[in-house]
Every structure is written in C-alpha cells, then in structure tokens.
Length: 170
Image (cartoon, rainbow, N blue to C red; front, side, top):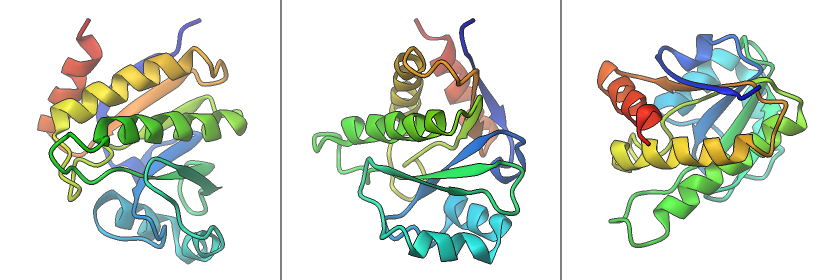
C-alpha cells in the first residue's frame, strides 16, 4: 500500500505521530520559529540530549527522544540558508528530507510530520521548498516501507495552500 502524503495547518508540537522533524539550527540547542516551539514543548531534557550530539551540519539529521511531545522521536535537520539558489540550496534541502526519513525509518516509524524546512528566517522561497519537499519524500518513501503517512505541517493557511498545490502537481 502506498504511503499517504498530506498537508495540514497545525502546531507540529501537538501532532500524534511517531516522528516530528525539527527545522533546527546547527547547534541543535533551540532557536526561534518551529525549533524554539519544539524545544519549549519537549522540555529541558531535549536540550540536554541535544548537547550530547555535537551539533549538525546543513543537510544532515540527528535523532532524539520526543520527551513531553506526543511524538516518540524528533529528527533534527538543518536546512540551507537561501543565497539565491545557485549555491546547492535545493540539493541540501532535499538531503534534509532524505536523511530525516532514513532516521525515522530506522526507528520503524509509520507516521512522520515535517515543518516547512528553511522557509522561515532562512529565506528559502516556499513554492520551491514545497516542490523539493514533496518530490524528495515521494522518491524516498519507495525505499522506506515502514512509513505509511507523511504530514507536511504548515504554520499558516497560505503555507497550506502552497503545499496542497505541490502535492497535486504532476
């Protein structure tokens, strides 16, 4: 059976899924936006575990427990900062999704929720980011049979519209 991909406007920290993905900074110690929200909701044990991970490079991903979140695990990935599009940004963003799904599958996750990685303060244009996200996840799900559902968790109604359009594009 093929995995379900869908977009939803919600607070990612409240989703009851096996894994949520955090759009983290390279320190993994919390920050603004979704990163700060996840750290606040998960509680102080998360930052303690993240300190032990030694940071994370752009495009890579690291796994922690979910602590106070409904999700069992958090995959922290560092998206690229948009620098005009000619500096490998799309490839690095795709790597975020690939590496996140690989870690989720290693934990036998069946449900995964992603935020819109790199589209906040990192400035990646959301239409391009959504296209990269959806295309990469579709390809990767063929490799990771345990994952049955992927939610693209959107902060705003406008973000939701963009992800819904990417999901229905040929």
